[in-house]
Length: 323
Image (cartoon, rainbow, N blue to C red; front, top):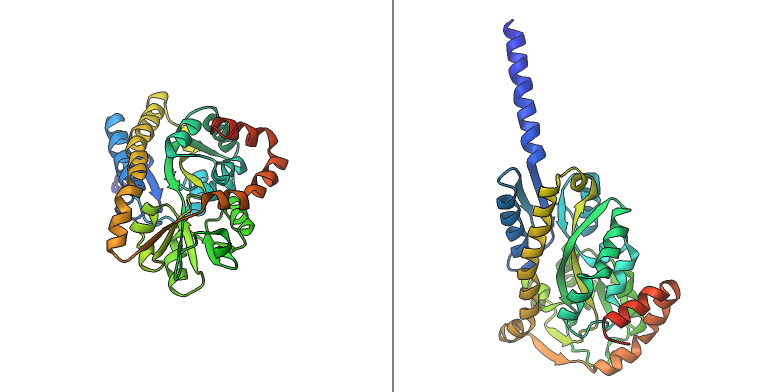
């Protein structure tokens, strides 16, 4: 009889633990403290927890503690984690169309990119993601990107000839730098500082906020403001988890993504003006790029993708005001 009672108590404890675990939401991302993505993830957790009346708790796992971006997407689809603030490159391996947001010099500024993503384009990308077991809750920002180098600025496209440059795992970025005559190679973000320090690469490309919060300007202090491409930060949930939520909780997740996203987007938009003098004070050297020359040198990238996605490339150019 005692054994039965103990067994029953153990079973109840296990069930309670399972219920608690089921209510925990793991929100994973790869950003370091000080990065707008890091701050927005914490804000997401706060808003979602409050909105759900405490029925769900959020465990934020930052700094790639749950793996790199590609691994986090796999984990979300498998239900190991529930949500990830991810990156355009790895997401484009699942939804190839999202890579088109990085066409060279597509968006004149961040507000233009946000308007496009918050409209029909964003809806279409979400539909494609759901076919792969993922749900896009919204689009945060990963800025407009610039090039850093260990020993020189690269104001003209010819300055990149043969340059060993790290790119995200994103074919669009690789194509851009091949068109510019560089020698690009993809590498996970979490491995980048070590690769730069060891001399595997001459440089890399990122928005200033990522460069600064990862201290990459200390390794590659020559920064050229090329503004060559835009990248989004898709906030992605596992579709199985999402589908298991009631409508009210789904709305809480969407609300948290939108509200935290406003803060995150604005922080990215404000970062260039604020960070350049700060980075210069810490020893970085800045230069402006000949953007007309860069645009001319990368025009073939549009031709390549227009062959595969003629309607979408045309629609993006029109939405971005290029046509």
